[in-house]
Length: 189
Image (tube, rainbow, N blue to C red; front, side, top):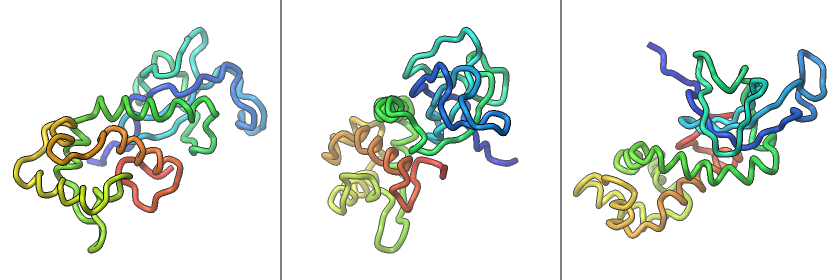
């Protein structure tokens, strides 16, 4: 069976009540009829744009279903967008929303720290997280060999790693902005 590669849920970054200029509508440039919403996916951090159903009111940080079944708030997904296509408001909201997703998916990220491997003979996946150099990388590896990490607090306490949520959020932002050769947490846009 093929692996699911689409988002089920996403968080609102910005609402554009009159659409956005330059978005193509059935082959012609201009404003899309209806309200658009810019979103970030919960699982792959996919940046999306969607058409909102008439009469639906959304705010930044709202979590909504964007999967394949019937959707309550969204008429359809317009498509994936790049970081540079986000509005200024969406870019400003992004770090807060990513931190919230990281906290909500704590076990998934702890599993990353417990299982991450070397990417090349000279570079470990853990080192790709901003703020983690060789010293912290070895502390993580040595501590996880003794006993796997249980949560962010345990990781922070045993390795003296500063704020893991903030570091992961920074990494996700780097990947979304296209500033990274390797992808740990996002899918290519």
